[in-house]
Image (tube, rainbow, N blue to C red; front, side, top):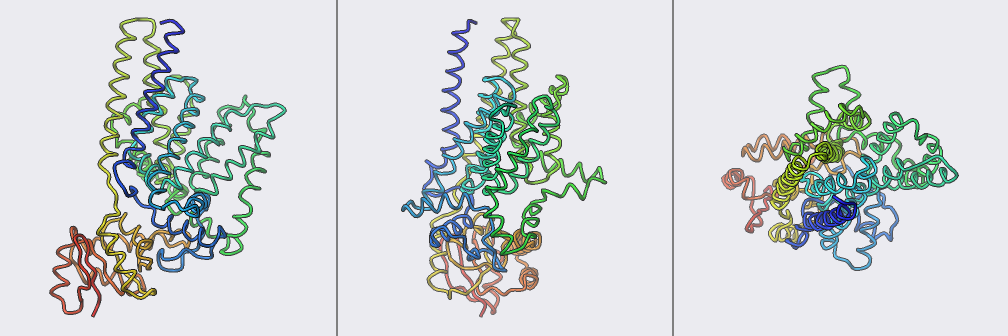
Length: 499
């Protein structure tokens, strides 16, 4: 194949990849008039910022017991608050901003993949796989992508700029810019900045000849200057413990407790790679790709994968990112290995095409199975609660995860049990346990069990809000119990009050 025809083929692949990526990430925004997934707390905090004219409030209203502090990294909230101030509907923003941010993230991911593997073809295929990854979609393109999607863009851009640093006259200036970007990551999502420090540290160890370590002082200077105002405000208001709470809230630092137990480490690794296996073919190619890296005696990506996998739930996004890269690289390595034989090359082209079709279509099918949690019935019951109950009243919401996350924002009332924001108080595990215990008791129609969960919360709900579809036995039990009164009923939800 001539150089001109090869270049033309790559252009066709780029255009096709771009079209398929746009289809994958915007499909649900166009199909539905409500955002997918959860972002009620983020929306509430953005609204509070807009009302406070961008001054950080002392607390976040409505979310969970205990007076959740307004302590989340605020960059994504500031961005949304800016659009809200300009008159953009929060729901419109939550539908289209995450896909738009996600598209920017894919562009940067393409550049990063191309830099790591020195291959445009690998970068194209990896970007296509990333666009249709169900877990990356859930993390970055759902409504909560106003935070995590933005963090992914900044994380990927920072790491790409970091590994492109070269010793020279502009090293310190470029290092400061990388540090500022890293600071923006910290102002968006703390888990992403944790891995942003982990990955460059590993990269430096395996690429000592690149002398990137010379830029570390400049990077740290840019980083500290960027985060200092926010860090100082939070430290003065709430103390330093608030940062350690959130860093370990999703088990990120759990590895320090299990290093002495191989069985627990195996369990930890299983959790970390679990989401990669949502697309089995992709997982198989990724694991095979790790073996290929060992065969090639390239250990930097192997170290990134293995060490990242030690950090539990939060590591799953980064394992997916690395797995996608490794899978794409392995496929094109097979193609290049067969490039001397025309028939073998044609056969490998077919294999790559089939793999791309299977992985992309599998992802799209899973992505399109999702639907908004905010329904007409949920909005109706939230309006009833906000208009017909005292402002200080509290409730127990018995439904599904996403609906429960949205309800405080929609109803402007406080739940007695809610894990969201609990990490900033150091009680995430306690609140999460109570939250899922209450759901389990309700599904079993076990009223004493439910009352026990309420007692353990230390609070008493003024109202039960229940999803009828999943909790009909409990509703029947309440109807036969003299202690409860039904106040409201619509197609999907009921509201009950203790007599």
